[in-house]
Length: 174
Image (cartoon, rainbow, N blue to C red; front, side, top):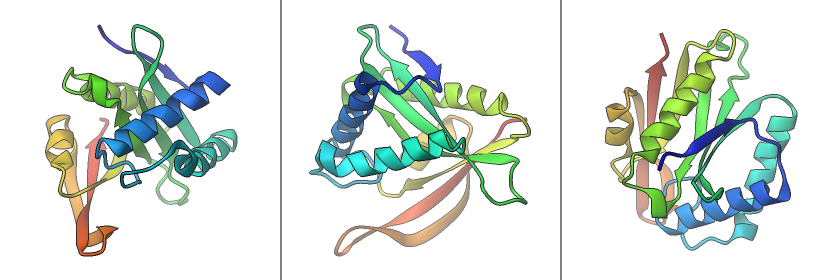
């Protein structure tokens, strides 16, 4: 059953809690979304609040995918580039599909919905994202049309002695 995507949904307590649960479950399943397992909802909450502040300021947009039961199953944040010479592309952050839904094509669906949302944003010609090396994420993003455009060796320290590359990917929307 396909996910139902909503761009810029109203932030309700249920949606907030659903995103917190999603982010926590993805992180604790080993997902590379800014935290290292084990992590709690309360550790993630301040980061989600920062995203909500950016949304209120008009700099970030939220894309949410709900499953057939209405639960939050996927999410991503699109953020306008603040640099005055780079308004023609957006960042895609915190791309998440709940572990119970992985392997069903929902990641591709989420990326396609994010590309559609970005295309609808005035003047946006591309999406950039960065991902953590060591998970094969760059292969997944490449299979969805993204191209690797940069790599910073050992930029991400997951734990002492466990440094990963930061990989920058680009999806032209033309």
